[in-house]
Image (cartoon, rainbow, N blue to C red; front, top):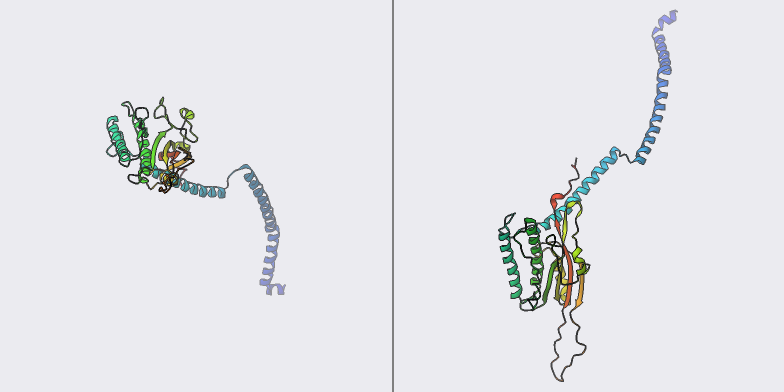
Length: 318
């Protein structure tokens, strides 16, 4: 006892250690075992839940974040496409200079007559044929619309857009035609869609993909989501074979005014008349210069009449 009293500190330490061991064995060890069991159960249930999510199409937070990133990339590309078509639609939507947004029919008709007469005058000055010699039987090759007093603003707008397209074709011909040298003969510019309900388009030629028999039922292509529609037209002209690539290239170019984005849908070339099988040359005579016969070129083209107000926003980029 005397020794115990002398070493009471160490006795206390040993007693405390024994108590701690007993407490750990009774309280902590079972909790550690329970934690291990719970972790194992959670892992199993997590794997089970992941399998259910993967098979059921339920999106996880990671999936949602990835989808948001893809949406933002898609929206940026979509906006680029919209901006591209919107840029080239600007010219198509313009009225003649001096006209208000809702022009009176009489004022529009006056401007329209002045503009078309200016184009015809430019063709005549450059000696480019654009109408039949039998003017009483064949209409002008430009196929100008006749403005009626009952036409509403949307119909006038349609005529306006057709004018810009005709002007583009005319400028391409004028730009490629040197002074006093007849290289082109414009046979026809025609639009396949009806100007107004109950009207009719009457092209003189069978165009590739749009023969005359199908013009009565022709319908323009409607862009998805109401973003606009096509304006499809045909061009027929006589042109030398070597000039065809240059003509088509300039027609499709956006650098020549009016700045319209034109797509080529169909192309066909026909001979106007065969070359002579034999050419007789007199002895000691100068060899005659034989000019090639022009080709008849038939083109089907379209312009996108775009409506940017109908573009989708795809939600916010949060």
